Amino acid sequence: MNLDQWLKNSWLRKHQTSAKEISNLLAIVDRDLKDAKNEDVSEDWRFGIAYNAALKLCTILLYAEGYRPEKNLAHYRTLQSLPLILGDAHKQDASYLDACRNKRNTVEYDSVGGATVDDVTELISFVEELREKVLKWMKEKHSELIKIK
Image 1 (cartoon, rainbow, N blue to C red):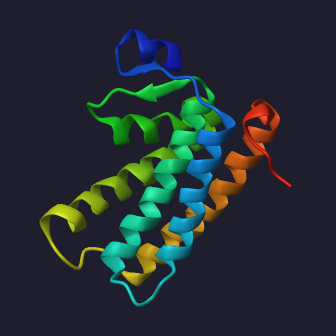
Image 2 (tube, rainbow, N blue to C red; image 1 turned 90 degrees about the vertical axis):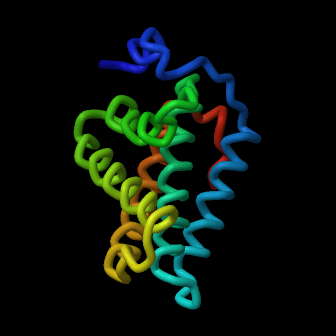
């Protein structure tokens, strides 16, 4: 499948982004990465914050390609678009992020204590690496949307 097929399935809709919107999303990523490292906050909450940073990075990719998810399964589709945009080598990354999405839902809505320090550390590291990949991709594919030093 590709993003055009997702559009035909009504899983996505067209979206015209801007450098300002991308800049705002990157600012959220950076804020969330910083906040997720705050050890005065529970691991559950830190995990949720780090998850949000990952979601925003995938959102940047999707927006840059001219799409946004429909409301039904928006997080899932945003995360699953990762290999469609960055390539099949990122299928495992999308699966990892989907597992994080499920864990985040559990610790946010159902129970306390589901995220460990190791979970948080792993996700923060993943997000930091993904941030670098997204910025590199943006420079190569959509440099007009991003101002990076």
